Length: 325
Image (cartoon, rainbow, N blue to C red; front, side, top):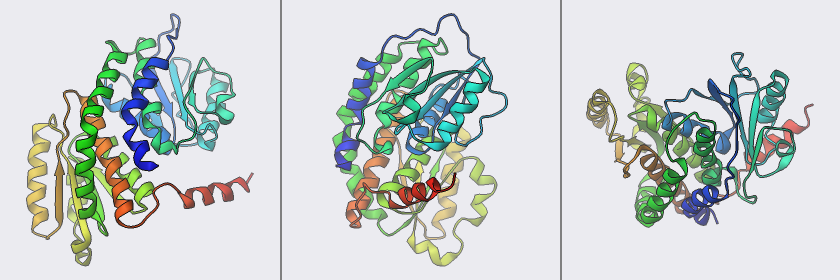
């Protein structure tokens, strides 16, 4: 089932484009956007923030809303289930401040609350498997709120077409990569801020689908601290794989940093992999790489005999939290 969910990403995007209504934000002008969401819901905001750097998008992954948020902020609350307690806490604070809100959910308590606009997404998926449904509304909403220009619907449809044409190739690559990553501690580095949320998405998918612990970081920041500790304790090196996500449009100095870092790491006999995304636009390259990571996480689970669907510890934690009022 998880394989089919990952495969359906292009259809999720295109169906959302066709189902999204033309909504009015009136004459209101917003100075910034606050996107509230956790886990598989919140990653959509991280992606939007890097794809639209002309818009001040702040992603909130906490119970508390930042103090600067006021009536000049457009708040977008994303919770696939509609019952995420952190996002519900955010709603209460935003409502008290009179902030305009758009709610994106499949159901639950959040969807029943008052808001400027509501977007209902299909039920029945794990939140991490609904990225197309949760991300695609965001560029359209930003365009409707006059925060970005251009044809956001057309861009999303081109993305869906691109992924449809690429997904079989992506899946074949993922099968090979997954077998090489089996029983390894995986460290993921992105060489640009554009691909930071992609590296984070890889981490999350490997955590939840493959049930493995993964670390990620971004250049150039990791060159100023983590580079010193990487490779120690040495007894872990034989079981560590370092994955580089290589942005074709990365800053030239970051490209040099990545090459030098690879050279330094090779002395410690760390296994190294590199992936250069395909795509004509930032959006296409980002989602090409996301789909690759999603498939890798699925096939790594298959390779190691793990069921990718259940997330037992998350559910157990939620049940225990519910007993604390």
